[in-house]
Figure 1 (cartoon, rainbow, N blue to C red):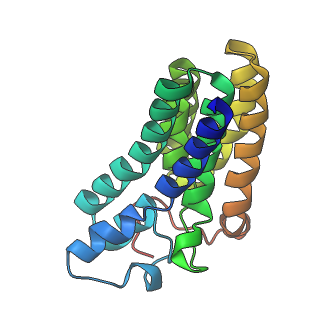
Figure 2: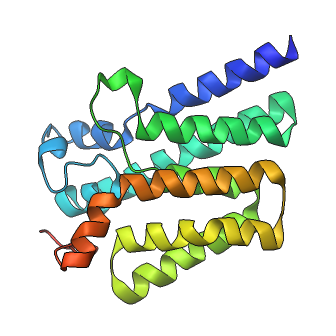
Length: 200
């Protein structure tokens, strides 16, 4: 029974990940244009670019909250790191590849990933976020901050909390982040990537 319940928690976490906070927030403002504006992404960066700081903050908190909720609930029910990691992966996959949105794009996994990290191991999550903040602060590219910080995530795990489930998770999450930002990588290489806060 425990394994069934644990598996259901992973499925539930995937369902939580499907919640499109960016769309909810912007539609509450009476605007349905998020997916056809800016980059077309439903995450906080594009919401900031198109709808401003307040909407972006609400989107960010919602997307982080999904990751936090999934892992906290799994920890309470299972008390096992392996299942916490599985639910963390589930909620990120639900955010990035949402089955309930009928083939439409999800977010890029950064905010939800940070929510997961902060619960799995706060020091690892904080250092990963610090690298994101420093990268964005220096170069002003949110996408570059995501790629660089999650590239360092496996290294931080190995140095601070070398748990096998978390090491595997860190590598897999980096690959998801890199895949979802591949278009950003190409624009960065060509000098066409808009900086954070840009209206382009």
